[in-house]
Length: 140
Image (cartoon, rainbow, N blue to C red; front, side):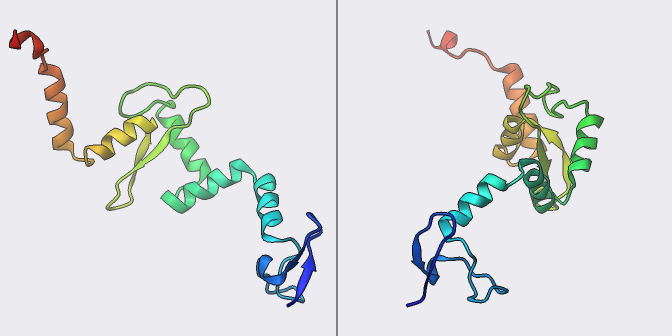
């Protein structure tokens, strides 16, 4: 069984414990899987990862996200409140068409999703809340 030494942890491990790498002589990376994972986590740029996720999930760039946020004055389009410091607004999109609708608090976005993104259900929920009374007072 072929083995090699990881330059980071110094362990001698079978080649199967190293990720594949097509251009290396032995077809494996220099570092073992564990050390490769650690290195990726410590060298990953969070801002770049955020940009990559925006593009992969919604087809928008970080610049487009920032323009949308500025256009709505960094306020949630559902409740109208600003996001607390250090909390980002999330991208709201139509799950059928993929159309990006705007930026919302994660809680407001979740509420829309829980009600099935259905305007009629949201209207009924609003009517219910506006006319709701304490039923306990009617029981006694």
